Length: 296
Image (cartoon, rainbow, N blue to C red; front, side):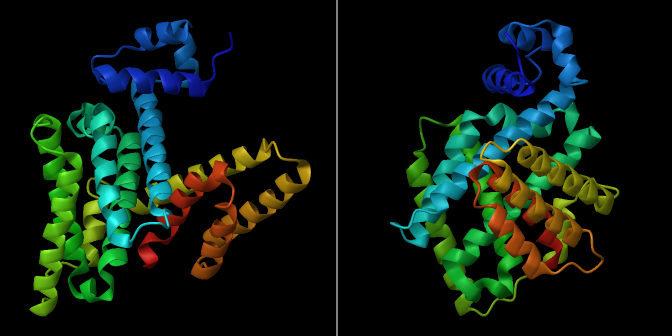
């Protein structure tokens, strides 16, 4: 039986999910895949590299499913906001050894993982920002950054409560309760004319905490994401004509991103075109987010 890199990631994800990173050995992952231990190292030089791949896979699936919920046109923005919070709790509980407890692992000092963590942190915070603006609109602009951090802190604390007091708290009730808190907070801050205390700089500092050279890391991540999309397109199953068209689009996108003064509207348009392909959507969304995040 031929075992692929993706098979190993799937096996590791399953075992990390059940036992945790520290309690799982490369030997156990190899046995689960019915291959020799050395075969795992052919794809992943270290256990840390494998965790990076698993973590990346888990967050990719998370955002794919979150995007699906966002596109439910039968519900109002606030109803979808509640669903997003409930889904976040459900997913993070199921994958808590990977998505939550990684902060306590020594791997957080591993350069590749730190870069990936910062990227995911940025994407998650941008996701919070999107939903707060979607639900509450322009009236929160004067205290937007404060609200993002408050919302994040509430989510983090209640996630811990749900994980460790699971029998006491309903996920759906907690999601509705949190939105009720935000409703009251937004109403109070809007009516009182609050200007907030934090700005975009606090957001950027938080996202890139622990990074000595974010510009270099960002360029590396963009290069990796572009390479991933190119690799997917080069093995496109839907015919040579479509493959050539997608190759031309990604080439234009890559060239625009690398310009000293890239056109934001063009990057958004090219990404929107690529996002029509389900197989590319998640990676393209990641690329768009990290490319444009400092131009908001």
